[in-house]
Length: 232
Image (cartoon, rainbow, N blue to C red; front, side):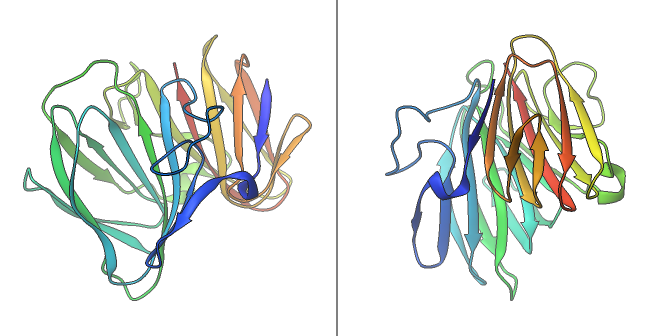
C-alpha cells in the first residue's frame, strides 16, 4: 500500500512567527483519518521567523526528533542541555518521565524543519537529549539511519521506540533502496525535489504513507533529499 498525502492537503496554522503544517492531527487540526501511522504520531513542517521560537514548555512520554532543513535551531532544556542544530543535522529528545525545553531560531534568516514525534515502547524513564551532524555526502544515493531504537543501529542517535529515522540524498535519475521487516509502517517526505515510488510521484514536502512493503525503491526525478520514518 502506497498512499500519497499532498502537501496542499495538510492541516496547519499560521501564527505569524510560525507557519506550521501538520501531516497528522495536532493542536487545533483534527482529522480522524490522520491521527498516527504506526508509532509515528506527529510530523510537523515548521517555518520559524528569525529571532523567534518556542518558549519553555513541557513534554513527557514521547520521542521527539528534529530534522533541520534550513537555518538552525537552538535548544535548551531543564536538564541543562544546550545546543545548536544546523541544516541537514538532527537532534533527539527523549521526554521520558518529563522535561521542559525551549527551541529558538536565533539566526537572521528563517529556519525550516521537520519535527517528528514517535510514541515510545514504554512510558517513563529518564529524559535525555542529543544532537549529531550528518554530512550529506554520507547519504548520497543511500539511506543513512539518523535516529533509531532498533538493535544494530549503533551509529544512530538513540530513541526508546521500535522505530528508525533515516535520510538520503539522491541525484536526479538515480535511486535509493530501503529495506525493512514485515508489517512495518513507513512514512516518507521529500524535503526537496520530486521522487517516485513505484507509480506514485511525490513533490517537495508531500507525505507518502507505505505499509506491507518490505522493500521500496525511491527514484529521484529532481535532485532530492528525503526523510523516512520506519515504525512498528
